[in-house]
Image (cartoon, rainbow, N blue to C red; front, top):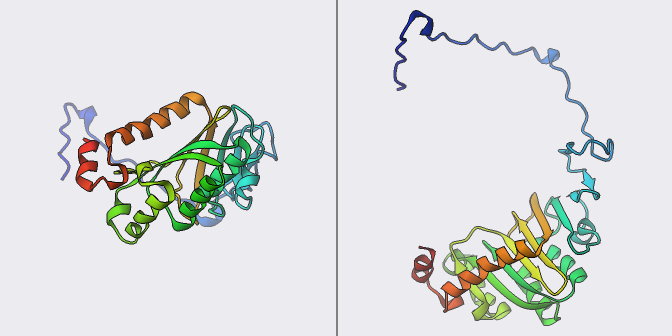
Length: 239
């Protein structure tokens, strides 16, 4: 129970607030109709709950129907995007859309989980030369818990056992780097189908890319056995 309040003077005696009287349903004013930034270009604070807002000028894009290519649009060095979709395209689709414009690049990925379709498509991008090198930090549960552990052997085949690093991880980001671009994608999405509302923050920034790349590389340095590292090794490295 809550401790009693002891007043120090008559004026300190607490009083109960008056009861809130709710208006009758017919007295409540209807909410204004939803609108987008396109209805009022000067109002950048408007956000359409219906996910209909797209403001290319500022890089804020709600894409409930567009493909990853359409949502991303044309990019150039220094670009940025904030994208929300409804799960109609995945993180791997976005990766391919970015690489199709940046050209071949080195890719670093952190994810909680990875699906067969997604891993296979990334491996295909490697085989086609679109991905020059690939490093993956992935949650340790993928090695020990069904159904994820059935994919563990496949990860070694997709990316090479020396490039897969188990971790107690929940972060989800991708770094895409070559001589012209240093793109970072920070997202709510795993490397899976993601048939749900997801967000993607995309920035071409060398300093940000160096920061996130250092996270992956420092973890890789802590796991010399990479893919073969067991749960005890991961736990020791996390301390």
